[in-house]
Image 1: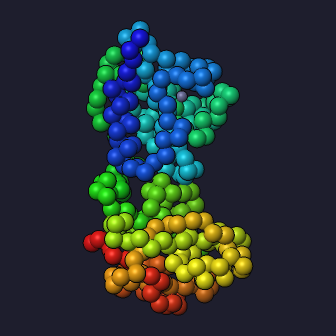
Image 2: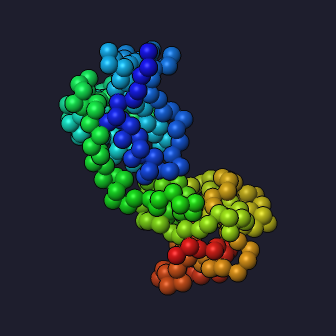
Length: 266
Ligand SMILES: [Zn+2]
């Protein structure tokens, strides 16, 4: 039998895709596969009208944003119930959920089994997406910045910039990946979880022998003339700050020079 995802959920998925253009879809799901048929609910199977009234939204990496998103989705009158992180919300409050799948890597969204709910294509109210919405998918990469008490995190993943324990600070800079092809590698200090970024393989190798773990390419820089990214060091707590702004001079921090250059799109 032909089936389709409830239009209400198609809209929800489109809003998530727009807000998080690089989101993982690893645990996304619509029509029931073996895993879902094993779940105690059956909204992933088409109803008598051929409509699938459930959608699973991948919720990795593990960041605080997903709980906010689950809360906001659960507030919509179209919702039958939402399951996320060992809890289920069917009537405005989260109750413990004891199903075999704890739903820690996806948010299960069921709309009510009524045409008025599944057919409604009204946009979902999701302030978590609109309060600091990521830039549109225009071929540019966006570097987001977040901070904790002793670390600055730079990432092209909006979701990671909302990692719990960090306060999202906004867009650090944007660049065209076609004009910036020199990899900037991210390292994490094993002891403190602090992050550092460098284009220098020598600096990276030295860091690895002194307690830093190589995490991989964070974003890209250029070797041609472009905007310097300034590096500052906080001696008191070991925090490094990278900024594209010549005017950002944190008081009491040591200026370490231009870390690398990026052809920044303003
Ligand atoms: Zn599900």
